[in-house]
Image 1 (cartoon, rainbow, N blue to C red):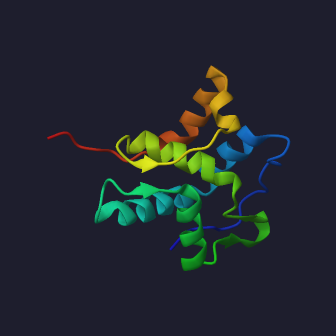
Image 2 (image 1 turned 90 degrees about the vertical axis):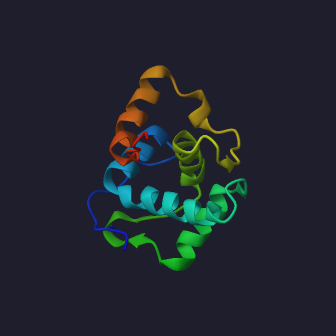
Length: 128
C-alpha cells in the first residue's frame, strides 16, 4: 500500500519543476517504488518488452486511487518523464520510451540535486 500521508504542499510545477520533482521524491518515495515494481512486473515475462511510463502511471492510477488529500497531490502526467528516466537509470536494459523534457536540459548542480533526492530510492544490487 502506498504511504501518501499528507505532509506539505508541493511546489508549483509550472514555476519550479525541479523543486516539484525533488519534493515528490522526498515526500512520496513509495510512488516511484510502485512504478518500478509495476514496470518490473510488466517486463517479467519478456524483459525486451517496450514500456511506456505513461502506461505504467495509468496502471498505478487504476489499481489504487492514488491521492494524498491535504497535499493536493496525485499521480499526474508531470511525473512520467521523471519516472521513465529514473527507471532507465536503474534498468539500463529496459526499453522504456522517453520524450524530450526539461529534465534533459538540467544544469550539473540541478542534476546533482535530483540525484540526491533519488539516491535513497535506488535499489541496492548485489554483484555475484
